[in-house]
Image (cartoon, rainbow, N blue to C red):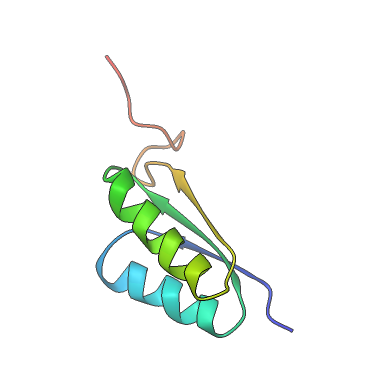
Length: 71
């Protein structure tokens, strides 16, 4: 039984490919993205269209709080 996989930077490139492959293998997938919500939404839509479960969360993995500073 597959579990849950969390993928940082999962909205594009290698992260998106990893998310799609993990979902195809039965994992529920959570991807994070810093910007480019439309790319993240596309990855989630692709996974769900193939019968998988996915969600996208905006987060900045480079910031200690997980949020981009807004000054």
